[in-house]
Image 1 (cartoon, each protein chain N blue to C red):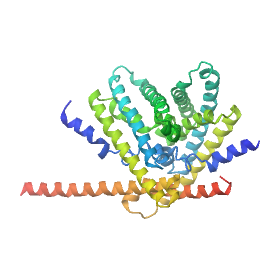
Image 2 (tube, rainbow over the protein chains, first blue to last red; image 1 turned 90 degrees about the horizontal axis):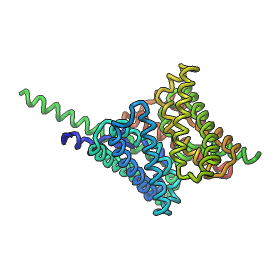
Image 3 (cartoon, rainbow over the protein chains, first blue to last red; image 1 turned 120 degrees about the horizontal axis):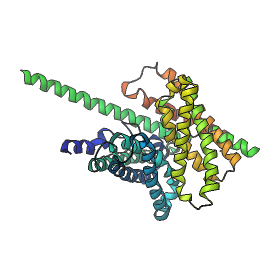
Image 4 (cartoon, rainbow over the protein chains, first blue to last red; image 1 turned 120 degrees about the vertical axis):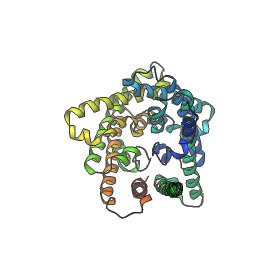
Length: 202
Length: 193
């Protein structure tokens, strides 16, 4: 496994941010980002499942027959979700009260199945671990950012932002800003490449 | 009877899965570009919802609970949903190839539509009886279809609007959904929450 590939996996959470760029896992992101605490709690639970299932699926990728790989992945993911479900109910009763309904829904979070299909099923355990950590952190960052903004606006007196409507609007605006940022960076890179290219010829 | 009416109303409007609970957003954004495919998707989801709710209900109360295997709920439910979607896939391919083609990958993705799993879980946690589970699934499915159709109608027009490049596509769709959700919140007030 070369270094370049590991680096690429490690940067995936930022450059291919699961929420803003790949637009995966939108439902929990919107539903649970009303407050920062909920957002962070669900983010960590999701990241844990993502990392565990990435490593496990990568280890089992040669054992699982290709034709039944999706049901296989889902069973592995559901198992880890059940682990998280039971652990949260036992050790974090407050979190269980607020995000409990959404923990089983981690099974159908497309980030996890998406990474299993796109990455863990094709790569070794170490890169898959790094990919899981990076994507997990990217998810935690995105959902927490949304939670921070929405809770801030709610505390400032705009109660609508704790509701679904505010979530949609803030998410839309953030995604537009992210697009703008990526476009600007790309354009600048292209210009630099262009300059470097002509400079080389002369 | 009034209980069924309130289940129906809450599934359709005041507790609309897409607008009020922000579940099922992927198909909501992905298949809402045309009215026909929006309607097809909505009905396919409704079909899976009804079957999944009823089958999960029966399995939970007659198999999992007596054997005290309740902790397997998540795993069992998701497997049932996956099997039902596979069946729907085979049936649709045979009966309506045109609809099958227009739904594309989103048909298989009904498995990972959180509305389905959430509703199946919700039936258990709300303690509905089997008739309630059935009505609830129909109401949730119709509510999902309603949101999808409204969005598709708006997006067919949005496509022709002159917008800054970074707002085009998903961002403006999300902001539109936010404004739609505001309208749904207004209706919630109308029916007394």
